[in-house]
Image (cartoon, one colour):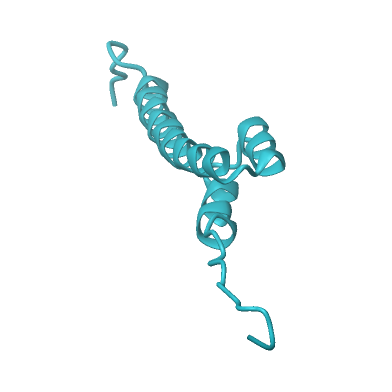
Length: 82
C-alpha cells in the first residue's frame, strides 16, 4: 500500500483541532461577555473578577447567569400599624 506523502495524516487532525479550539473560544467569549455584563450591572464585583480571571469553558458564567444574576424583587412593605 503506497503512502501518500502529499498530505500527512496528522495535518487533518491539526485542522480538526483548530476548529474545535475556535468553537470553544467563541463559546467561552459569548457566555463570559453576557455574565460580565450582568455582574457589572448588578454590582457583583467578586463575581465579575472571578468570571474575568477563570476560564471554565462557560461553566462559571452559565452558573452565574442562571443562579445568581437575577435581582431579587424589593417588596414595598408598609410599616405596621398604619
